[in-house]
Structures are given as C-alpha cells and as structure tokens.
Length: 196
Image 1 (cartoon, rainbow, N blue to C red):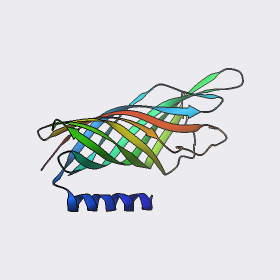
Image 2 (spheres, rainbow, N blue to C red):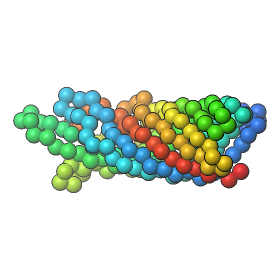
Image 3 (cartoon, helix red, strand yellow):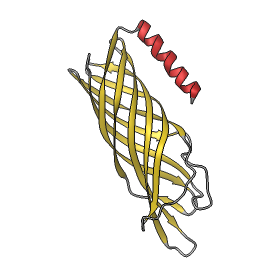
Image 4 (tube, helix red, strand yellow):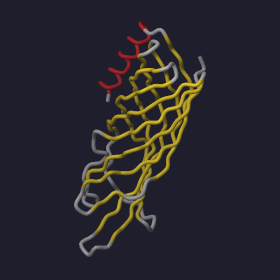
C-alpha cells in the first residue's frame, strides 16, 4: 500500500509540474454493487445500493488528463450459501472503505471523457449478518486493489462520471464458515463541482 501511495504521489507531482489545467472540488454519488463469489456452496445474491463522497483533482492538458480521488465509500451486497441438505442461507454485507481511484483518460469534444485506472481501497469497518441478523466473523483484508473504467461528462463546472469497478484481489481470506473467494463489483454514478 505504501508503494502504491508513493507511485500516485509521484504521478500527481509530475502532472502538476507539466499540466496546463488544474481543478479540485467535492464529489458525491451512488452505486449499485454485488459480491462475486467463487465457491462450491456459494452464489452471488442481490445487489445493494451504496454511496460515496469526497474530493477529486483534475490535472492535464486539453486532451489527456489524470483524475485522482479520495472518497469515503459505503457499499455492500449479499451472498447465498447452500448447505449439504440444500438449505439456503442469505448473508448481507456492508463495507465502509476509504477509496483512492486514479483515473487516466482522454477528452473528446471538450465535454466528453473516456477514462480508466486503478483503485486502492482501505477497509474502515464491515458488518456481515445472516437472515436472522446474527453477525458472522469473516477475515477481510484491510486493503485491496481493483480497477475502474467508464465515461465522464463536463458541463461547465459540473462533472459527471459513470464507471464500472471490479476487484483484482480477494476481499477476504478463506475461513471455515466462508470458504469462498469474494470480490466486489460496482456500477458507480457520481457528480462533482470544480471549485476552480
């Protein structure tokens, strides 16, 4: 994680030295997410709605840009476990994270953007419960890496982003109660305001 933050800082510094455009502002939005599972007795459940809020920075020229963000994200999803007798149990999960996506992209027609880049997520806290609201202990990792890709729209000082997010690393270590590889997928819509 330290190496990733150092790399991001170096990239931001190089863009700020060479960049022709610099803007910063608040950003917030909503998402719909699920937990993709890969285990013999598990399957992905329903999507869950979430939200995020934080700050973004835009650096670059008239056609190429970089947009790092610092966001508090609340997201989740559900997992269905089937036991040996065919009985299904639903587990609902909620995650609070500190997300650091760094988008690299191209601008078209002065208002349309195509973008993609890595995201680092630091787990702040989580809750996972069965259908009777009984908590389940799962050994979730404190940090994970993934990627985001999507489109953006600039209208004056307003920016809008529609992105898809997926994980490149497992969210949890396999435990006795939860022997499955969990990875989160999200569709994210957000809006921001360029202060300058």
